[in-house]
Image (cartoon, rainbow, N blue to C red; front, side):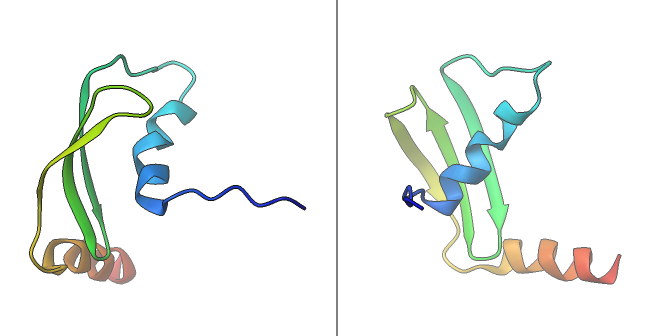
Length: 71
């Protein structure tokens, strides 16, 4: 089977499109908080993204992961 390379953080950003009742319109702001990838991104189009900020370490994402495990 052919593989399609996808950056996993982009997968997080596009998860909003899974809801058929909500389709984001460009431009929009995304905040990802997963493990070690915590970013604030301005999404201008499907091919244009600008990282506005990110964490220096993965503390915020680790906190989400640890709380999820406890719950």
